[in-house]
Length: 135
Image (cartoon, rainbow, N blue to C red; front, top):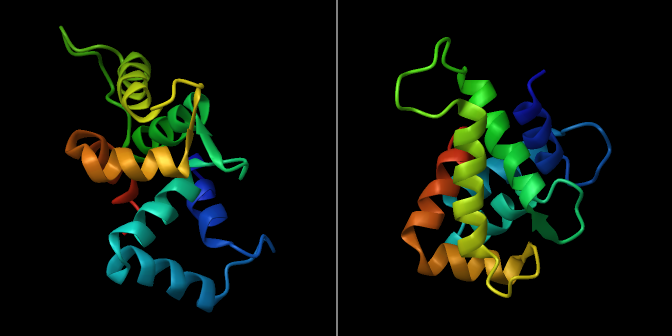
């Protein structure tokens, strides 16, 4: 199982039972397809908040984004002038994280996440590309 699959499973297993019921699956899918923008952002925040402590760290964000690239397949050879995928992920995370950590405390709360996503199209687009892999 890929790391991303594990992260999505954990986000869908809201009861933390180790099992996804049809109700869990239907609720998650409903939020992603028909939920309000805030509902979708809450679900995405919970996906990125790997340890469930209510904040996203740079390491958590890097784990999620790297897992998406692992899922999609890493390029077999390096292209001239394009950074290696690990370096690319780190650069992308640093850029997005800096824009989201509004108070500069080294973590992103849901309020910071929500504000950043609603006000910055570049941030929300970057995160949406990872969440869209789910649906």
